[in-house]
Image (cartoon, rainbow, N blue to C red):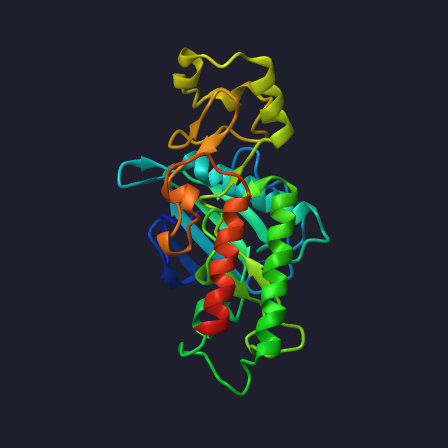
Length: 288
């Protein structure tokens, strides 16, 4: 069961949350039901994240992702705000169906609480060849190809907004139907804790053309550059990310087995880093 301290923000709305998964930075809990009411004023929301006025059905399966603001001495606040901003953007664009849906987000003194749609099919990882949910009768090539197409569509939406996921892997892809071969099966991309919104290439090119390249400005590091509001929009870039004077971003993040070479080498990145990860996902989906 979720601790009383952790559940205080949504205890009035949700009944019997039960922990069913945990990761390096977060714990995830089942939420058996939620009262049929506006989620906007139920608790203090995260700054500039969710302004939802949805009326949520009591039958909608939900889960609660509880993330501490600090872990191992690292401040995750800006990462969490970035994740909420991305999820809210996806939610606002109704046509997008391949990103996990954010229902509400609450900020507490020591943690964030994200209320998300629950995907009964679980992680794609457990449906891969020779994994615990794999069944050769139902896990056919045709079914896998449909999942692969869904992942590509989700990534297309992200990249259309210049958002790089940076941790794309089968354990961050979830299935919305419990039966793998369900005709309405759909894959959704989740876990945007490492994701970043990048400036347009044209903007970077323009800045480089306007500013003479000298030894001094090449060495200058401006982690707070985005706070000026004309490069990385919507949120302040986390302090563990290196952003140069042109708005180019580099960071060491993700799962090494799925990381692009430029990430592992700590070079400046672009959305193409996700394409390498997508290829790794496709390879492991087809081969196990």
